[in-house]
Length: 208
Image 1 (tube, helix red, strand yellow):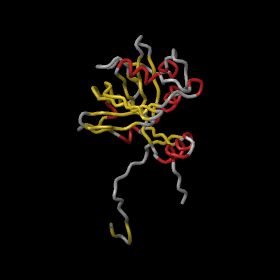
Image 2: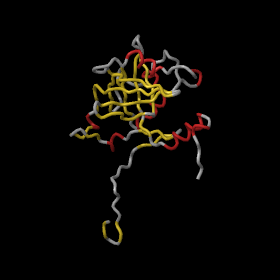
Image 3: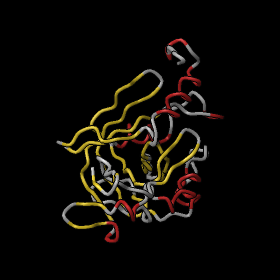
C-alpha cells in the first residue's frame, strides 16, 4: 500500500488525489450578481449540507485559475459584496450548459447568456435562479471562513424551489427523475441506479 503525506507534496498533486478519491461530489451551480446587477453563474463541486437547523449549505471557492490565477473568483467577490447567492442543482440533461458556465470568461460576460439559460427572479435574494434547473436554493450569507488558499462559504437557506415534476409529495424528491450530476476528478457521473442497504441475497431459494 502506498502511503502519502499530502502536506509534503505539490498542492496540485494533493488536489488530484483528493478529488479522485472523494467521489461522486454533488455540484452547486451558483448564481450571483455584482453590485451593479450583472449576472454570474459558475459550478462548484466542493459542496454539501452544513447544518439542518437552521438549514445551511456550504461551498468552497478556490482562487482564480488560468489567466486569472491569483485573483478572487467572481462568485466569491459577488457573495462578499451582496451577501446573497443561489445554489441550483444540476440534472444530467443540463450537463453541457453547466460545463459552458465553467469556462474562465472575462468578468463582464453573462454566463446565463453564454450557456443559453433563462434567469428567473428569486423571491428573497437579488441573484436569479436558473429557470431550467429542477431545484434551486436561495441563500443569505452566514459566514465565510478562510482556509488556506480557499474560502468556505456558509449560506442560510431562505427559499426552496422545486419543479412539480421532480416533487413526490410529503417533502420528498424524485431522485430517479432528477438524475443529479456528480463530479469525479476530471469526469462526471449520473445517479441512474438507486438501491437500498442491506442488499438482499438469494441463496438456494432462501432470502438472507
